Length: 513
Image (cartoon, rainbow, N blue to C red; front, side, top):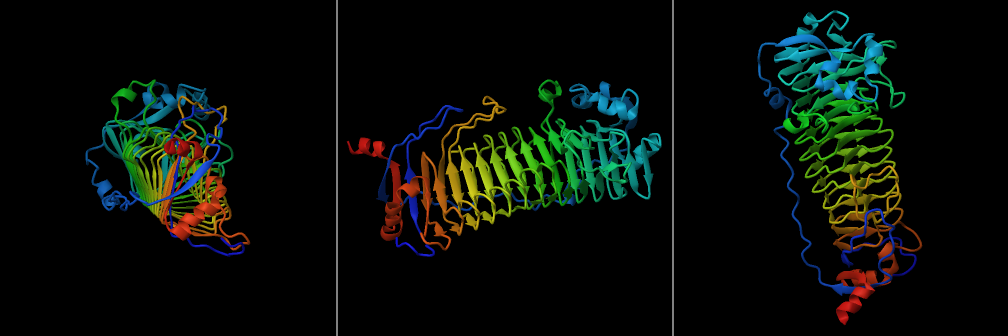
């Protein structure tokens, strides 16, 4: 290739084949392969149809409200928090009982709903005026509120706003069925008569938690400034009971639908732990403190579609982490977040990340860390401050028909790394320092670090990729194995129009011998 060419377009087939040699998790990463050889081959077996995505047309406000069983209200009572297993997480560890004892100035109590369909007006008539008061449709709650397993709570448009008092220590616990529709739920600072501002992680702010066995439907509503940095108190959380609670063995995993709503200023816009079949569609997550959408630990079959996540202050717009498997993340827009637009992390596998637009994020557009066997299909990663797509310590990653445009670093970056973080539990979060990718179709255009960089691959395959380099004196630049053999690779890709096989020299000598 002549020096000085301003841009290059390649329609190419590229296979990079190496040896699948697992390394011990946590061991130092050494360069296993001293040298590579380049060969031309015919491409085969890389075609793939568009991925099948879930039909989301049935997830509507109306179909959710049809799930309500219309029954007469049950019992509404005041009970001590220490006597209720649903509050064990908040009063039985880490001295958190003091949070509510100081605010209530007594052994803390909660409002408990049992049986039937209950509305906020039913609660208002059953408790003392200070515990829940209302004026012109604005309700102020000053006690924790529990929806027990036998109850259904409906908060609808008869409630203009439900304010959860920060000073009084109010929060919502769903152990049954909760429907919130056409209203607003706000963590409320009564002293300043304003939504509770985030000051620091450990400063209490009201929150919503839904336990194992529960169903939660948040519909066409607005949620403001919920959550603080204590266990299960992050903002909106769906969580199975911990293993120390007997209900962990007997209750189904929590589930629910979150549709057509806005989440503004939450610590985590959404968090889940061991949840199944949660649907998160057509919402806006803005100004989240740590994460916008954050499904976690052993959650399965989640649908995260047509959401907008932007302005996350500390980390990522959308992240799935620690064995979040067989889920779909599609047609979302994630931008202007401090971290990545979308991240798949810590042994999360079998996920489809498709048709998303990620742009202007402070780190990568889409990041895959220590998570094998995921598909990225027809995403657009534009103008992010690191890589368009980054893959680390992950095998079986397929990137089909993706675009990376004007990202600060590489369009697609693949590398291995030993993780030396002393806080990482390698039994809980194991990994191998191996990487393999298939890249088919798509366009890699004007990325600052070049189109592709691959470090110590065990298997990487590329086919039919358009690559435009930035206008510079050197034309296309690639790093890693590709960069070491760039003249040979380009000769096969452009002149011969064949596939390229790059493999360790010692493997080729064994084959020849």
